[in-house]
Image (cartoon, rainbow, N blue to C red; front, side, top):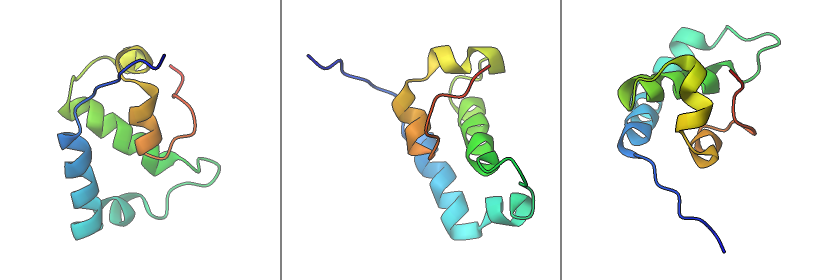
Length: 80
């Protein structure tokens, strides 16, 4: 049996609109990367944390479900 998972999506939509309408993340972080291919995705998840629960970075993997990270394009839950 599957477990129902809920998490606030309003802030995810806000982050997507900022990316789509203003190109903010590409403007700020477009040339940054190198070995960190998921840099923008991780930044988006950190901004989502600030807008939603504002928990310690060490607690992020424990607070948010895996589906929230998948929405940002991360293949796995970030480690501490």
